[in-house]
Image 1: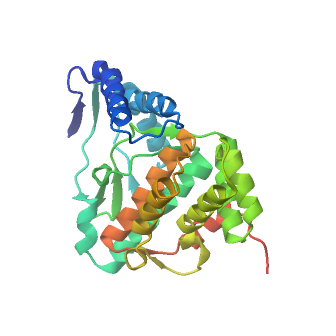
Image 2: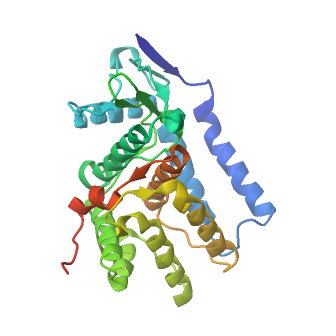
Amino acid sequence: NLAVKVQYPGIRKSIDSDVDNVGTLLKIVGLIPESVDYKGLLEEAKKQLYDEANYEREAQFACRYHEALQGHPHFVVPKIYPEISSQSVLAMSFIQGTPIEKIANYDQETRDFVMHNLLELLFKELFEFKMVQTDPNFANYLYLEESKQIGLLDFGATREYSERFSSGYRQAFSSVVNDDEQGLNDALEQIGFFAQSIKPEQRMAILDLVKMACEPMLIDEAYDFKASGLAQKLREAGTILSMEQDYWHTPPADAIFLHRKIGGMYLLAARIGAKVNIRRLVQPYLKINSG
């Protein structure tokens, strides 16, 4: 059986004007301070939308994921049929399964199993594949109950990352686990943060936000995402940082999209009530001080 994804006519032609209109509206209503270089973000948004609307590009990444996960016992990637695909039509094998958020009603073992594998995949993407499917939309995942596998459906938002970027996050996570604030600061600078001139208290606020995001890595036990409320805490802390402290710092685009994926995975874990030992998943990639 085939699944065929067909692009609505005129989508690509409307991207520039649609994004420009959003930028104009935000400027008019005063949601963006004068000091913020929002034009760079708008250009990055256009690039991302053009990439997602290019089904030939998506097909290439789907094939790369299919190859990278070939033989993996817990993931299924659709087979792409390039001979009947194009820039606006994507033909692939059909995968039938349960929408991922529906497993909130399943037993704890199944919920933990699914989230364990999705988070393990995220670290593989960042540190091994150097490419991350950055769209955490729940519709991009299915659970195949009979085979106990996870179907991965959409690769339009896949981004490739440099070794420098990947190693920057390796150092950042390691520094948080090692309680090394200077190391974390250096890692964020390597990734591309702090390119703008900022106040010391603003820099500290960002360091604290990253530490909060890494909270699940600090304990060598199953982390309860729902009980912790971490996803909501991160959202609130980010809002306070940008609004109450009047601090609009524009992180590098690569980091923005990666953080969207991480935040989405945390949100999914909370939604389905999963408990996962993140420390065990990320530890193979980190340099952790002994003692």
